[in-house]
Image (cartoon, rainbow, N blue to C red; front, side, top):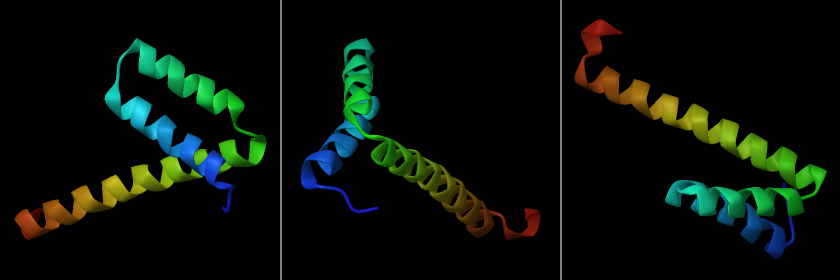
Length: 71
């Protein structure tokens, strides 16, 4: 998953635009995604999946720490 810095910057910008929210940022994120090649899009999807799984793992761990008897 190595990309030239410009592609990596675009991938990071997609996250920033989505996190910032709003229609304009959504359009900007979509434009950046359109510029990405197939490999970069695949890697972006994989990063999103990993982030989603990480959020689930953190939430479950926090639940275990707060209420170990329920899990």
